[in-house]
Length: 116
Image (cartoon, rainbow, N blue to C red):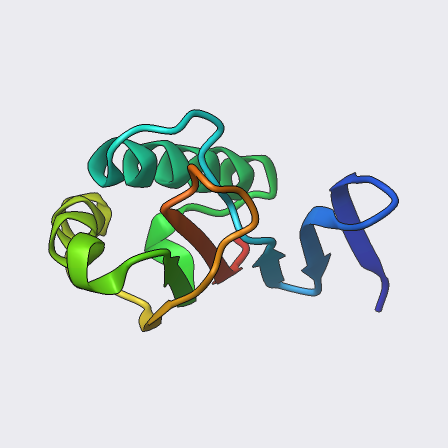
C-alpha cells in the first residue's frame, strides 16, 4: 500500500493518506484574532483538507487540540468546536496546553479521519 501526501514542502505534508486513513498536520490560523475566530478558521482549513482527500468531519476518528492558554481559551474554543461537530459522529479527543509556533497563534488542531 502506498502513501499519498498532499501539499508537501521540505518540512511537512498538510495531509497523508494511507489506505482509508487520512492524517492531517496541525492546522493553525493565519491571522491573530480571538480564540473563537481562530478556531473557526482552523476548522475551515480542516474541512477543506478533508474534502480534498475525499472525507469530511463526520468521518473523524481522533482530534488533538493544542491551546496556548487552556485556562483562558478552553470554554470559547469548545463552543466553536461543539457547534462544528456532526452530532452522533464525534471523534476521540485530547486537549492540552502548549507553547505554539508563533506568538499570535492561540490554537492548533490536528485530526485523523477515514476516507470514503
